Length: 242
Image 1 (tube, one colour):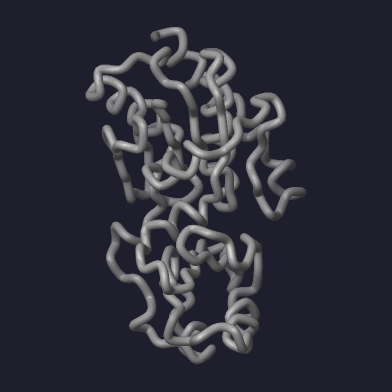
Image 2 (cartoon, rainbow, N blue to C red):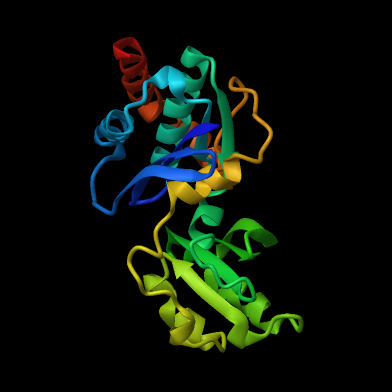
């Protein structure tokens, strides 16, 4: 199975091509750029380098949230347009899981974090790729307090990763150590390759009903149309070219 995986849920962009679990290519951009100007060109680049055409793809995997409203809408719209136009399968994978899966120590609880501003975050707890505490929008200091008070959690067996920069003091106040925070700039990023590996084992979703998991749905729905048309047109143009 050939999978095209997309993640534009944060400031970073990740696109990967995977065949039967083997990584053919992955591009990660950690730049303050509008993903609408780079997503389709990145897809083009990977497809060309892999000597593949759009019709060769079997499944499209999309990071479906939580995260940036604009980024989630973009990937969802591009993914849906490609899946519908090319009659391909589509699946969604948690944006937080794509970050957590970069941490390979199976014995640790992994807390992936995405900054939602004003002390808020999107966060969860995973262990060895499995959900322990579900993805949620939260006041991160409160999330940490609940985590540290959980008798089943050993504080020295917790790793924090993702957009942790704004929460280092909160992490320390909750009884954890800064040494438990991933600092490597690549390891902290979402990974489209990890998304593709998860997506290979998921049941395809209905392309028409596929929507991002915003976790703050009302505000997100109000903003949907702001970038929907732009992303849809970009994907349509890509399909027409191929």
